[in-house]
Amino acid sequence: LAQELTVGPAREAIRRSAMGGSTSKIKTGSAHRDRIVLFGDSLTQQSFAPQGWGAAIADAYQRRADVLNRGYSGYTSRWCLEMLRHGGGIMADAGPDDTTRLVTIFLGANDASLEDQNPAQHVPLEEYKSNLREIVVITRERAPHAKILLIAPPPVCHAQRLQFQKERFGEQATGRLERTNENAGLYADVVEHVAADTALPCLNL
Image (cartoon, rainbow, N blue to C red; front, side, top):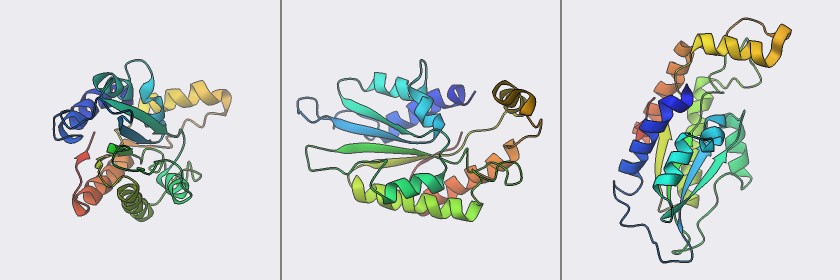
C-alpha cells in the first residue's frame, strides 16, 4: 500500500522539484554523472523493487542521473542521524563534477510506532522534529547544490498491519496495533512544519 501511495506522488514531486521541473541542467557528457540520493527507512530501501517509486525515478532519469538508494530497513530518524554524524548515509560532494542534485528524506514511519507497543523504534515527536532538522543541516553541508525534498510518513492501514503481524510472528502476534493512522498523521504534521521552517518542499502522502 505504501508503495502504491508513493510511486505517483514521489515521481511527480521529484520531476517538479529536483531540477526545477527540467532535466536540462543535468550533465550527460561528463564522466561523473549527477546524483539523486534517496535517504530513509524500509520505504526507501524497498523502493527499488519492481514497480517501486525509487525504481520509477531511476528509470525516468536513466543516462542522466544516478539514483542512489540509501534506505535502511527498520531505521528511525534517531538511528539515521547517528549514522550521518559518523559519516554514513549521504556522501559529500567532492567538487563541481561530483554533484548531488536532489536528496529525498523519507523518515518517520518507524518513529511513529506506539511507545507502549514498540518502544525500540518509537521516537517522541519533539526528538523527531529535532532529528529532522539536524538531518537537513548535514545534508545541506554535504550536498550544497542539492535540492531537498522531505517526504512525510504514509497512512497506516490497520487491517494490513494486523495481517503483517500474523504473517511475521505467527502465534506470537499480539493482535494489537503497534502503529496507527492517527499517530502517523501527527508525525506527518511535524514534517510539514520542519519543511516550512527550513524553506523546503514537503510531500505529504
